[in-house]
View 1 (cartoon, rainbow, N blue to C red):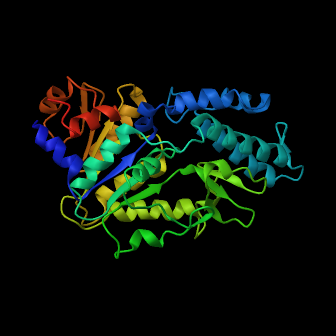
View 2 (cartoon, rainbow, N blue to C red; view 1 turned 90 degrees about the vertical axis):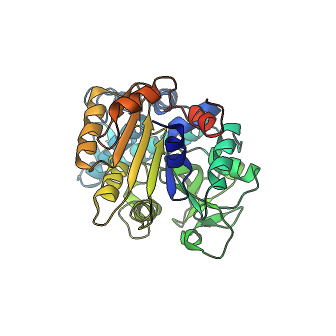
Length: 353
């Protein structure tokens, strides 16, 4: 496989990106397993017990802090529909307090600093150079590395909010055509600097100002109850993700970095984007080599359903898909672990020969 082929996937004007928490590791941010371990230390005894009683997202996999939150939200639904308003020692106040503690702990572990990353800045500079229009970046991580790096570079971007100190969610700027070339940043799982105020408005505030007692952090999945509402922030952002994948443009590509396909909502959106009538979307994903066998089987099944347009490069030695020459892919991968974001950036900026 030629280097120019990979470069084209990553830099073509019609390529959009989905970045997961793995892309923030090079800047000192925790992966999900690390985040889970650190947040669990901060929970109550009953909160810690939950993770010992639930399954992970795949057979044999360990549950994450997102799975713990999901369990609490399911308990919340059950308790809310019981006459005694409690189950297994949990009542609504205790559940709400534990969920709030998880949200605050996630922010503490990830950090409240507004700091850019040299690796991210190189990535942004390289990808905007070849964009004839706006460059769409969808994020699953909670940190603010991308936004801080864009601002460090003094480049324009839209993030779904209007305002500065107390900005409010408004997705209409994404569709604004009367601006210079820019980045569109969509944080599909929320952000450490988003809160839901007492009036239910989702706002973006400077991290140092998020101390209000009348607001709560907006981080997936504790906001799941808003996903199904017509104007829920997550529902809107997921719809915009789906719309982008279904866009009728030449060489429509999604490049996935730092995400291990653990979120079924995202996976279904990607698969639907490939299989929808008239779609020409092709997906290229670079994921870590530590995937469980169950996760690999899911990806193989997904590739088999996706008509040669779903391609996954696993670590340094495995290719999943039917659209490319397997031997050529594995030969190309053997010298560099392209699942590491910094290696992708080095490749793009000419540091890989």
